[in-house]
Length: 281
Ligand SMILES: [Zn+2]
Image (cartoon, rainbow, N blue to C red; front, side):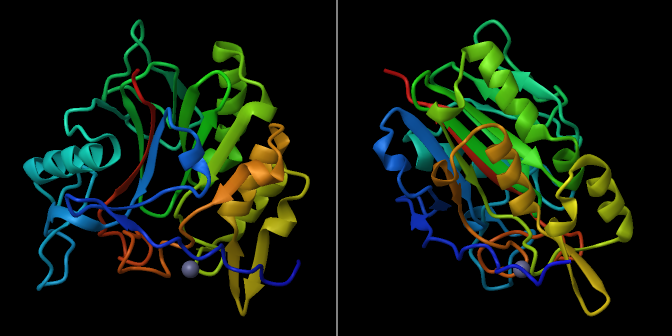
């Protein structure tokens, strides 16, 4: 096995929005004025379920057992407002089940929250697609020419099932997306510095990817997996150029003040949302 990889790039400084919500955006994507996007952090918002005692509130965006529905609804409105300027911008999510199921949403096929899946694609302006994570890898994709967008949830199960490759193939089928027109961003997720896994994952990845061994390294007795890199390789395999792929935010478990991390919080964590959409005319 190769030596330990460098940890993923450190986060860009999150931008605090006027409403107090702190977001990460992708360097260079401001050149796409038609595009809405952001990776949320835990900063801002009204949740106290996961907050240190003195904290005024956090941006938990998942309907978790520890938090109230009202708080999460309010936080989702604050996120929408910070990204689009309008707290009422519709947010489309799916019930995530660690699959490779991709849901297309649009005027004729609106995704419902009850809809199961781990990827969302659309060419419909005026809505935000949202993928919920707290260590798993969120991947956002935009087609600069066709003006279509996608959001994928890639934990280890989704990664082994190649959700990102399947999702980009769906964009090609449904919107005519060409790889050279796509840009992608891999958001905050547990890094190879912290993601200790069992040998069953090594076997699962080796059964699926020729180059799987180079995604793993050992530290003492710990086997560690690089899910950021596994998904970057899927984007490359789908035909994206290396320079079209941004790594944003680094490791969730290394930065507990900035991100919710399921692993770092021993399973009791809030959720972040990675959102992308097409600005209406
Ligand atoms: Zn880490």
